[in-house]
Image 1 (cartoon, helix red, strand yellow):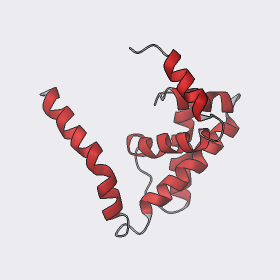
Image 2 (image 1 turned 135 degrees about the horizontal axis):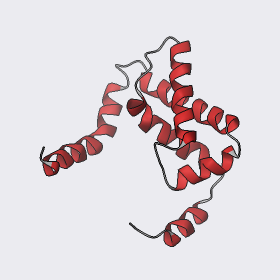
Image 3 (image 1 turned 135 degrees about the vertical axis):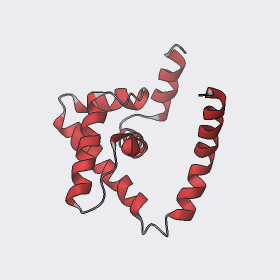
Image 4 (image 1 turned 60 degrees about the horizontal axis):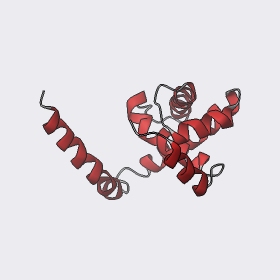
Length: 126
């Protein structure tokens, strides 16, 4: 498969996602918003369940890793909450963007913008 074509398609999807979200949200009855709320609750729950949860949250906030145990716990919690509320529970990959946004929202209360800039300047680029 041609990776250039795949990257171009992915690039367009990333650029158009906010537009689709804005246009489709009223038709979906707030489902995307509910997924975001569930994701935030799931992240808070994962932080509470994990030893040194806040440290892990800040670490994932600074360098996101979908395989991190905190992220996996949050995804599992979100899927359980969605099932309990009667909504369709998407796959882990589909919930990933909601969880990542929720991590940003929750962690931003603990990490100041100055800390983020300092860490970014010190982190070697790969």
